[in-house]
Image (cartoon, rainbow, N blue to C red):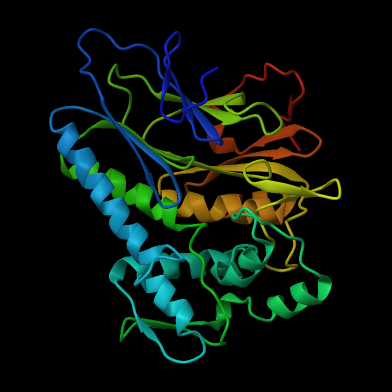
Length: 353
């Protein structure tokens, strides 16, 4: 199976969407126009936009312009970026933020509160210390974790809406929007595509998938949820969707092994260690990708019971949760769109808990 992101498997027209989700495309009728497909590396990951219709090329170009603008503002190490400045001035003064960045931060704080801190954008000091996203990851000592936890806490991020500023209360605190900014970029991509009259498109930002409309032949998109213990691109179930976003957080995406122990990249802000919630992955389906991005992390950290409780408390939010004992749980809103399709035979769909 071809691994390259955004390439097509010629026999079945399958797109492998990064390492999280697989989107399947059945062949179109002869009336379907050829899509415009552009792939670029942005926001620290591969971004693929596939759009149908007149003016698709111009629309897709505008999408990438917007994504690069968001990247400049919100990427943690972007020189001159707003988040970079906010972190550099932690404990001293407030920083003027654009409406984009303020919106994302306010959304992040909302989900921090709703998840009781399972999602927290001030997790930056811990992410930096673990170094899972670098070539030299490490396991911090207990003392290091304890000290860094003093720098983590979303209540230390002070928002002044009247002046459009934000400030971190303590020196050394770090805001990291890596768990939500890609979702916002996906929403902005769809907004721009719609403004240009595009009615059918698929946007993939490092596995954050946003579906605009239906496929050109009028059918829904088929989205496969990754087998967390299978080869990249293998799936265990299929979702039939349109005008939705799908985001997955899983322990298989980024990790390192030290002394035969696997350490994944999803840090629990409450403990300072990779989350041990009993989950292999949490997939969120909703209308806004910014919501799905934050919630997929929150649910993974919270685990099955508390994670599903959070999902069920929110309107228009659904989930597919896979546990370490390889059971698959699906919220009621997806029952009509969900099909178990596990070629490995290792997973069990649980109808009722």
